[in-house]
Image (cartoon, rainbow, N blue to C red; front, side, top):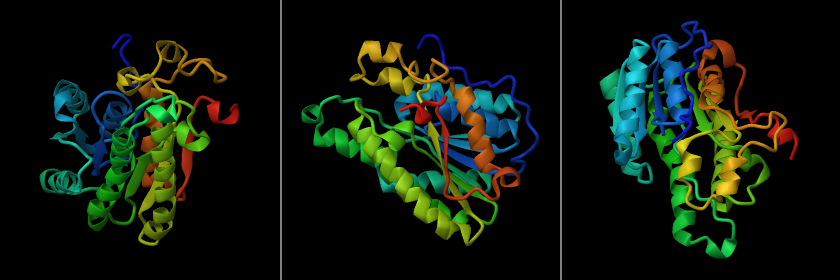
Length: 268
């Protein structure tokens, strides 16, 4: 993928905000997940990442980047569409890294079908299993391990906020994810656990390039409709996740949608 997505966030200065924490990040190979893993490590958290087995080389690169920050990185290959693997990912994180304090549900399946007649049930089902059901299974598995000051962060999308003309199943699943996270947030808050949503705008990631149904001209103009006139880099999105993970920064932030869209949500 050229140019390669930027994830190192070289201008970001850490302040030990996540010292002693353990984060489980799904979709932690290339893209936003890698940038989030790197900044969590820079803020002194150990990290476990979930990824598809065929993305092993990308996962290894994420591990090297996390270890370069001086933290541990546990690799968890598998497919999140099943409840059993979601439970296994949580249990291995707790067992091998000593606990779980931050759950980042970031894995996504994107299918840019532009016509409802072309959208198969298999496409729809896969989108909901990865983009929504996985979060449900992960939250259920993680809940017994989370305590006051801990955090759940769900990755939605600007598409969840406005509806997507070319991403019918993706937009629907991400909107459902928002409306799953908001009601559980009020319940979890009673125990001091914060649940929030990060909603990135168009971001230069493998997820977009790998979408077989996105027209080439659409990829070329990704992000061009916004005030900044460009796509985001993963390193520009990741600091929001540090904010939501840090109890020192976001102790009064519960059930919120933090949109990082380059102004797109205000211009559409």
